[in-house]
Length: 139
Image (tube, rainbow, N blue to C red):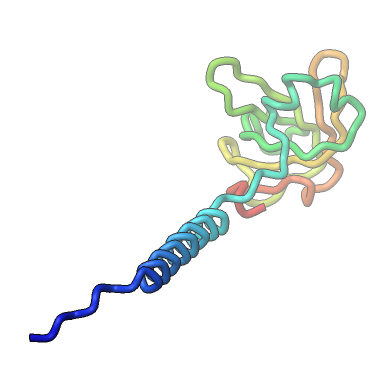
């Protein structure tokens, strides 16, 4: 009867090394998938953020995201509201024209000059192209 030779320690070390390499590669692959699937950061300030410290934005060009409220066709202003349900905030938006998809309840990004008009904070919008309508993830 032949005896089988016991496995050499060298062979066990190779197997352990291969297992470690496979585990490390699997972790790296998972991290890459998570990184690539993560949503991009929102490049726009929200109404809530701007109104938390309005003096920081006073007299500056801003790009602010919020929801259209109190808009009536043929009016020259509407409110852009924030997303906080506890303490709703808004900025008055004055404009010359709005895009065709524009409506109350739409999420928009407004680009313009932020300032205090004497009674409220306001963003002056010069062109309809400075109001982006739709899903903020597509901006």
